[in-house]
Image (cartoon, rainbow, N blue to C red; front, side):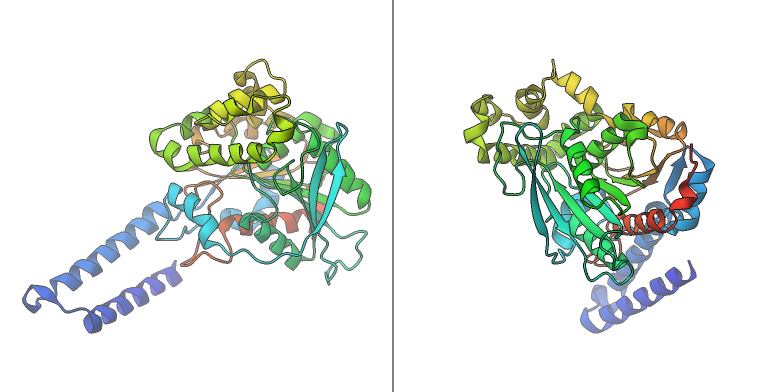
Length: 412
């Protein structure tokens, strides 16, 4: 806090110097204009420090996992300082893709076949220059799952690959069917409730690098899919640990939130159009089974799911699909260490639907809640281009799991 006060004093001093030299003092030279600016700056700084910058809340079902996170992941105990000029939820969500850097990553693509004849695109970052883990057969590996329409080229995925590279780890990105340029070979895409493709990918990765420890990280819908997989498979899962970012825990609540006028305008309509564009790219094969013209008339995500997703995956109704897609019902069955990061102001995942009570009942799960951060935002720093709070959580947790695996034994 002392350093923060010093920085603030320097900031106000510099600001005062700027206005004295660059701005003509009005109101008959009284300096009132400068006083107003400095007063506003001081008031804003006080508001920011008292109401915006806060320590996250850590909820864990077991003392051992809670202490592990406190000891090995100091970020869970540190105050999160959102970027002071864009801490509001929607601003963080909208700006993150534009202000964060996209580091160059040279992937090795692999197409694998699913049991139904479809193909799945995997992008590998082998990290053969790893100094800490030169043996590729045992090099720790992270499986990454992007969001709803995301691919391996999303900035948040590239940042996690970069963090993994610096730690000496290998990454493999699971691109959902049809989103990364490959053709659909069967009339089927993907959804948060169906984990069959994820099971195929995990089995393939574990066969390919059978001696390497494996963790996974999922973002938004990728996190939902990952959490649903863990809940369904229980003790059959052989991942060392999992971290989930900005997951929508209750699809009913998330969808309702996105249908509020402002959020429908800012997010819902855009995401619906992205989903429709993906469908339209594969119209030739999809229109053999589905009414694509009807799908293309959907105005919201709910309408899209009613006309397409729930039908594709055989649900009697869209409500049945949303119930099955909601990870909140499966938290109790997770059997591997899982850290979940959510922002309390995320309009995609309302905080009243966070699985707080379910987390408290499972010693394998922890929920980290920040006051701000939006949806996959978590911007911090004056110009949040290189790293976010989410990146730091990913780096510290992933490193802690790989380097201190024995500390997580016996969480049950």
